[in-house]
Each structure stands twice: as C-alpha cells, then as structure tokens.
Image (cartoon, rainbow, N blue to C red; front, side, top):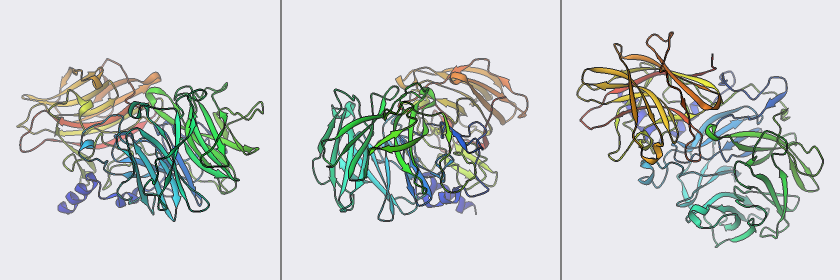
Length: 551
C-alpha cells in the first residue's frame, strides 16, 4: 500500500495522472458551496460576479446541456483550469488542461506573469480544443475528448514572440481560421487584430496572416478577440481601451478578412462594473444569449461576470440597454438564464480536508512541480509538504517554485489551517506556514532553530524586486501542531493569528495589506522551505485548510 501511494504521488506531481482528477468532478449531492460567496440568490436570480475569484480572460462554450469555461493561468501549475456549469451561474472546477508547462526547463522556475495568457475553448469533431498563447514562444493547442482530461500534449500551432489571445473559427466549408492580437511588450506593436488560415485539422497556421483591424485611432489596446459566425456575418468580439476602464467592441463583416464595421456594444455606463473586459458569447438550450466577461478588481484579481445579451439588426447588445442606443451596461443582479431545468447551487472549490488521493483542484504551484514537494498522506488524512531548498539565487519566497496557492475566493474571508511540523533535527532554518502572496507578501510560520521550533511573522515589501524579508519572532513553540489563520477584510487588509488549541487565537498584532501579483490578484498559500541541502528533509502535515466567513 505504501509503495502504491508513493507511486500515485509521483504521478500527480509530474503531471501524468490527469485522468485521475475526474474522480473529483462534483456530482449531484456533493457540490461544494462557498461560505463566503454564492452568486445564485436562490430565488431565480443571481448576483455578479458569478465567480468572485481571479479567472481572468474567460472563454466559454456550451456542449449539449453543459457549459465549460477556461481562463488564463500564467505561470501557475497545473494550468489552464477548466470549469463546468449547467446554468452559467453555478460553477465548479473539473480539471486542468496543462499539467506541465513547456518549455519545461524554462518553467521549472517561477516566471511570474508569463506562461498561459488568454486561451480559447471550442468543440470540434467531437473533441475539445483549447488554443492558448505563451507571449514569449507562440500559440499552442491541446485537445481532449473529456474536458476533465486527459488532455493531449501541447502542440505549437504558431511560433512567434508577442502573438497572443488566439481564437479559432471552423467555417461552414470546413476551413479553419485563427484570430489573435499582439502584445506590445514582446511584438513591438499592439492595438491590431490579425487573422491566419489554419490547416484543416487546426494544428498549424499555413500563412503569414492578415491584419484585419487597426484600433490605434478609435480602439487603443484592442485585444482578446473571440471569433464567431452568425447569419452570414463574421464577428470578432474584442475589448479595447485598457483593462480597468475600457469597453466591449464588436466587429462584423461578410468577409472573414474584412473590411469590418465596428460598434461599442457595452461599457461601464452608470454601473459600478469598471471596464467590462474580454469574454465569451454563449447561448442556452432554450435559445437565450449570454456573455461572460471579467472585471479587474486589482488585488482581488479579474473576476467573472455574466451579462444578458440580445441581437438587434445583426448586432449584439450586451448588458442592459436603458436608452435603446444599442450599447448596454453591466448588471449586478438579474434573472438567471433559462436552461430548461433548475440545478443545485455550487461554487468553485476552496476548503480542503486533504482526505483524498489528490489535493483539491483549486491548488496550484508557482512553477512546474517536482515529485519531492508533496505526498498525499492518506493514512493521516493530510497533505504532507516536504521542505525543499530555495534556489541558490532566490532572494525571497517570490522566487520559490514550491508555494502551493489558490485564488482569493471573495473580498472578505478567513482562512485557517492546521499544521503539524516535523523538522529534520540535522537542519536549521526549515520553515512552513500560511502565506499571502503578491508583489509584497506576508506569512505566519513555524521555523526550526538549534534550540527548537519558533513561530515567526514575515513580511517582504517589493518581493518581486528581490528585496529581503523582515522576520519577527513571536514565540517559541512547545507543540509541533499549531493552527494558523489569516482574516482578510475590506481593501484586502490581512490580519494573521495563531492558536495552540484551535479555539483561542492570538493576533500577531500587525496588519498587512495584500498586493496583486503580475497580471493576477493576490493568492493565499502554503509552503515548506529550507535554506540548505542535506540527504533528507523535514516535513509539514497539513491536516486541513478551511475558508470561512469573517466573524
């Protein structure tokens, strides 16, 4: 049994056991329901955001009665999260399409903000296709028959630097095309949209492409195009004007290469939803049209909203068009989509009891995983993190690949975890704890010293710039088991505390204001590190991790 569990762990951490993740697909009666954010109001209406977590650049499709959503994942592994819904309001994570990110040597170390940018998902030839861009290498394709996996190895469709935001189109004659944008930081140009011809199997571009729209004068920073065809028109849905304050644009033409007419179909208007950005048009089995997009909430990341959509004179109108001018504005509450049935409330996973053979699908590493980082200690019902040496050139935890983290699940919440620390007595400086990660970070942790284990509070300002940590000694510990907690309040102010009995918590006394990361919101995570290498490591058993509402 022991050898079997070790083998399973090796497969998980090297990304070869994706098919096993299907065991964690939520089923009726076992749906996870958040204690801090539920979009479904239980009375036939919903509130935005439908996913109050950092799933930026969402794209979505419907296959039969099921909806699937993918989003950017940047450097996080497993990457390319795949979410599922029956009604566009209640979502759960069902898997990841990328278990190890190529080029592998490159992503074996943290590459904050690089990696998977805005992907697109489609269902062609009885298979799911995901096209995703890496702004430094090109556009890749992965495919699967089951959205929960296993997914194929990434295939390079279009090599090049600065080619981003791809979306395919399968035309009525069987021809395939790919629309995409450009990242100015890599390509040296932005605010233009191009179309390339694809091979019939969609695995490679077969021409140099054509720029079909230039947004420099009227639509600066146009990006994130999505490709559709309806009533003889080709449509490119694309946001412009920048993430925090921009607008939703739609281009249409009778010819795939243009010329394209333009229309702004949604902007913030008088709503509180700033810069409604990049998203996907989907319809329901009953014929309703809807639009999923993101809103940039800074430190909380880019959260997912759902807007009603209608067609008028072969132009989409997204949101609520109060004055009838063809341009809508976002809604905060609305009647739920009519999908023909009522489905149970469910939300993306957050808490984890670590009682299964796999960690929850919400967890991601900051680089390609190694098998020596983690063991699912099912005999104890715990996640075991082995201490892993920080890279020699790592100035702080920002540069550590083995931080296991998840997205903030709401604007306000409390995260508590129970940890038992077993340091290697031959080592000094092993450290394990609960962290809030961003450009600056803070954590509360247990740290081994020559004379025992201590509780420490650590902060690091401008961690991304290589600044050193500041560590404050709290107390020497007499027990190897401790409860660590962080309470996140308005404006992402974080208060850390600890307890020896799980009941009475003592505050560290110093609040920390979380910061965003590169293109992402702040994350909450677990870690176990050491500063030097010998022939064995200590370890931390994480009994459970729970997200609850603030008291």
